[in-house]
Length: 248
Image 1 (cartoon, rainbow, N blue to C red):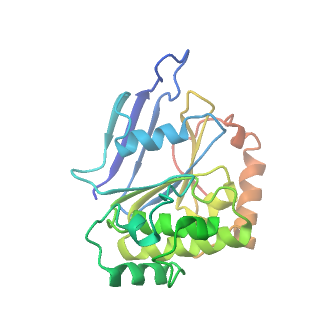
Image 2: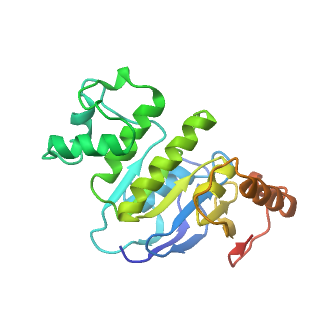
C-alpha cells in the first residue's frame, strides 16, 4: 500500500443538527501503526468507516492507493453463530484449505477449534478468530474499532501479542480506535488525539518507546503520566492543537 492521506473537511449524518467530523487531516506511511483516541461521540468509528469506503457521504478525500486490501475488526467479533470457526473464516476466503485454517488457528493460540461453533468459545477466543479472519486477505490497511474493549488485562495482553505476530507477516498500515490510552501507547507508533465532535486532530503524539510493549510496562506507565501531566484535559478532547508530532 502507498501512503494513506486523510483530508476530511466535514461529515454530517443525515438529520443531525451539527457535523460529526470537522477539519480532520493526517497521513500515515505504509506499515505505520496509528491509534485514534478521543471522547465518546467524537466520531472515531465514523472516521474508520469513511477510510474503509463504507461511508462515502462526506466532504473531503481519502487516498490509500488503488485497490487497497482492507481488513476491518469491529468491537464485537461478528462471527455467525450457525457456522463453525472454519466456515466463519471462509467468509472472507471461500476456497481456504483446511491445512491453512488449522495453521492460522494454531498461530493465534486456538489449535483444534476449526469445527467448534462460536458460542462454545470465550469472548477472548472469538476475538482471536476475528483477528485471524481480518488477516486472511493479507490486508494492506487494517482498521481496528476497539477490538479489545471490555476484556480483562491478561486477556487483552495476550491479544496484543496475537496482533503483533499477525502484523509481522504482512505489516499493514494500521489504525486502532481505543478509549484506553495505555493500550494506545503500548501498541501504536503514533497516537492521534481528537477533539469533541465535530472532531479534529488536537495532538499528534509519536510514541518513542522500544517494542514489544504492554499496557502495564513501567515505560508505558511513565509515558502515560508525562503525557497527562502536560495535557491534563487531553482525553476530554480539550487540548490545544499541536500541528507537528510530539514525541516522548
